[in-house]
Image 1 (tube, rainbow, N blue to C red):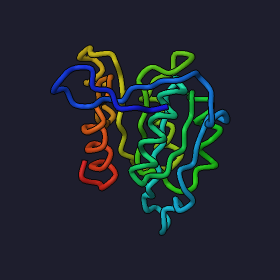
Image 2 (image 1 turned 120 degrees about the vertical axis):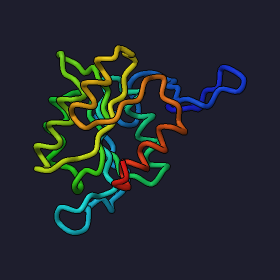
Image 3 (image 1 turned 180 degrees about the horizontal axis):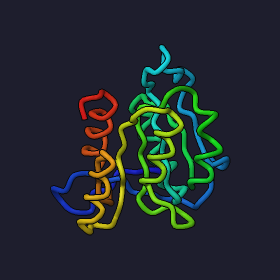
Length: 168
C-alpha cells in the first residue's frame, strides 16, 4: 500500500510502502482502466508500464498512477514483462522501471524490451537508489530520465506528466 511520508519537517512528501508482500495485485499486474487502446495506430495511450521487483513498490506506483488518471501494466521481472507486453491494452506512453531487476536484469533492458515491442521510441523513467554517476550516464545514453529513491511524489508526478505529454 502506498502512503505519503514526511519524516522531516519541511521536507516534501515521498512515496513510502507499507504492508506485506502480496495483496490485490497477486497476478503480478494491474490494468488501471479500460480506455487504454491508444486511439489511432501508433498514437501513445495513457498506458504506463511499471517494472520493479518489489511488489509493494509496484502496487504503490500503480495506485498513484491510476489516481492520476493513467492506465497501468505492471511486471515484477523482465520475464514477466515479456509475457505481459502482448496483452498491453494499447501502445505504452511511458516505461517506469527500477534500475536493478531480478536475475541481473536492469531497467534499461526493460525499456529496450518495450521499445522493441512497440517498434518506436517510448519515453522512460528509471528509478534507483544507486546514486553513482554511472546510473545517470546509462540513463542518458538510452534517452531516459532518472529519479533517485526514495522518490518524492511531487517530482514523480511532474516527471510522469511531462514525459506522457511528449514535452520531456
